Length: 301
Ligand code: CO8
Image 1: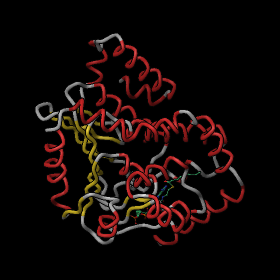
Image 2: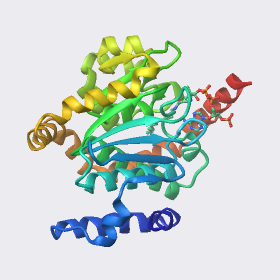
Image 3: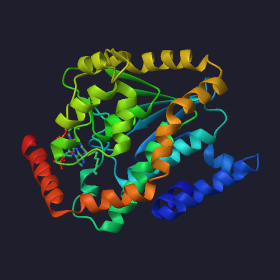
């Protein structure tokens, strides 16, 4: 109930989050919030299944056809992640997709095409929020990449602690923004540099490269490639190994590795939103997006 009303009024979403944060900052989470936070929930776009005995949640993206990251999708995802983060019973999350063949098609292009500057700004803030929550999560996060994962889908995967991809040469993963005539922002670039190194990122970003699972494994963009039917079992086994490490030591180490990159965005959030809005609303960029959308349609026909 609280979730659906938060979704109807996005300011309610941030209200809910700040309400939760303030309850936690007083050392205890209120009973009402706890009941909102029990995490075996299904919302339209995200399904969360928390195993109370292992402390592992499986978060499945289920937004047909391709789990594109729309404003509504991002809002639901952030609420789900926030609830898990605040649930003491949850120590790890496996992020996967219920859609066949696709992990996530990345940002919803329709959110960037023909929209007002205000709406674009709101959308971009939600993209930032998703990245901040995922890259800075205290939980162990494992991406079980069950299908193609271009652009924002690749970004989501890279925010996780570990990536396992299903072995199918038709699937691809990478930051292909330049193919759309747009430019991956600095924090997309930083996340990739932190994952695969500078030179590989330079090539990948300039050429908009999309890698097969095998190629992604070779450059370290994913950590493991396994047959599709073993994906979730492998992710669960891997999670068990990660959870054997004391949380506090792992969390401090993760923060030490990631904080400088996170700080760079948090101290530049408003400027980054401004840049995005002025870039994406340019006529030439809108034309590129239009052509790309047409190309997607034609490819299907
Ligand atoms: N956004 C919106 N709609 C999409 C998207 C998307 N990202 N991707 C696919 N769709 C739509 C298609 O147009 C199609 O719609 P319809 O049914 O109405 O014709 C439907 O989803 C199904 O698509 P496909 O038939 O192509 O599905 P397939 O299963 O054959 O392929 C793929 C799945 C591989 C995911 C394929 O759809 C694809 O390649 N999509 C494009 C992915 C992409 O290029 N995403 C980039 C998004 S941009 C981004 O994430 C970062 C932007 C950073 C901005 C920085 C600016 C400063």
